[in-house]
Amino acid sequence: RGRVLDMVASGRNHIVKAQVPLAEMANYTNELRSITSGRGTYTMAFSHYEEVPNHIATKIIEERKREREAQQ
Image (cartoon, rainbow, N blue to C red):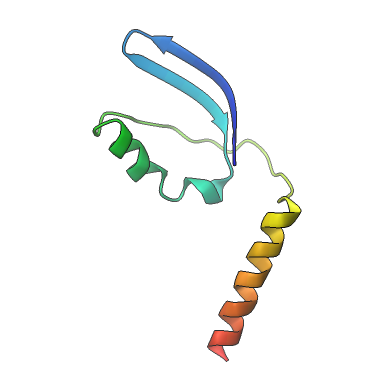
């Protein structure tokens, strides 16, 4: 889940500008290091809030319900 806004190649460097939900960035550092042999870096800045798509919201709600039931 994300949108690539721009991609620029400059020699051996590639800059990708994208909008990605924060929840999708949890493991990004490890993934980037893995695919770039440890050379890739990234920066992150808040852009905006956006409504969660229905199919994902339903999944999140069901997961939270299961967690609550497990605690009781």
